[in-house]
Length: 64
Image 1 (tube, helix red, strand yellow):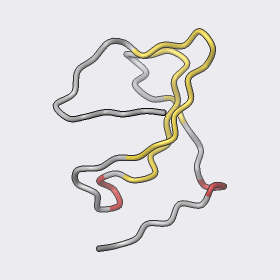
Image 2 (cartoon, one colour):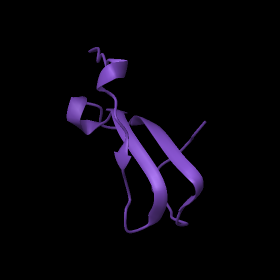
Image 3 (cartoon, helix red, strand yellow):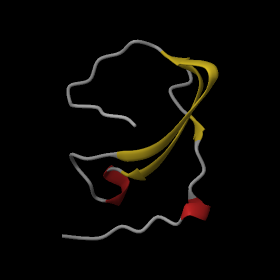
Image 4 (tube, rainbow, N blue to C red):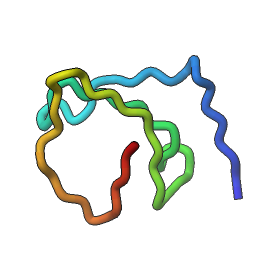
């Protein structure tokens, strides 16, 4: 088991899914780049009037 520390000052959401969204930004906190194979955690921002196109995943997705 390992640990991953992300410092708040280093988290900067950037535009994501640009061909399939508008006004959406995401910053990855935990993903494959830090050794996680089945879990991803990120900070997302959706601007007023923004959208993400309808899509499907082969895994569960949750958001708050």
